[in-house]
Amino acid sequence: MSVRHILKMGEPLLFNIAQSVPSEEIHSPTVQSLIQDMLDTMHAANGAGLAAPQIGVSQQIVVFGFEKNQRYPEELPVPQTILINPIITPLGDLQESGWEGCLSVPGLRGQVPRYLKIRYQGLNQYGDIIDRVVEGFHARVVQHECDHLIGILYPMRVKDFTQFGFTEVLFPDLHINDQQD
Image (cartoon, rainbow, N blue to C red; front, side, top):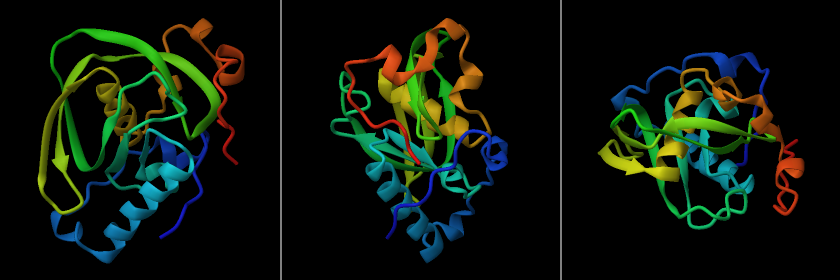
């Protein structure tokens, strides 16, 4: 498959609401190829996740997961997941602020409040039901990626802009190439 160009903040498509994927199309070569391209692109960019709109496709598909990620070296592994037509339900009102970056907002990080514990549901690449309860960084990644499906980029959720800036300034010891072309 192939690594695709990642759209950057400012591209109009990133602010649109993505279309759901009809269940009868999940097995199509077009959708399966898109999923593989998303995984290839996410891995090539060392991302924790990627949403279809980030590569110019307005469909409700996100991919995420890693064993170890140089962009988030302190975080526990998140299982690789393909999530189609996701639904997120917060489990409680408790939120936690944490640092986020985004492949569509290269070179920047910000503190973003997210629900600490969520339930997410949807379909996988085979059309099978996914229904998980997660918390912590796993929950943060899912919320971040699913925000892309409703036209929200993480800077739109930053509450304190003294906690938003360039990765190289905020985390000088974190040696990553966060500057995607």
